[in-house]
Length: 110
Image (tube, rainbow, N blue to C red):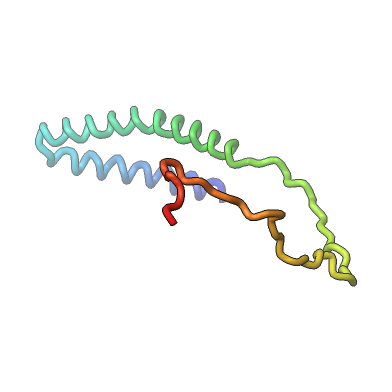
């Protein structure tokens, strides 16, 4: 099984090389130069992008981790048999009526 996988892998790599040479021989020089520049740019950007992605991915994972939540057990309050709300009394009356004086008023003119 291992020899079959190795043989298929080498055959695939050989096919890709032959296909690349066949297509590359038919292209003009500016196109080949542009494709080589593109491959070099991708080859340079790929490791940097992977490193940045791994750094920020690991950082987000640590930020989202939270400590385990404490276990809280809540019991219902005991049922009240008597009315615990105090009864309202008669309305509050002030001991004596208040008198107001208006500033600037000279008194009543009755």
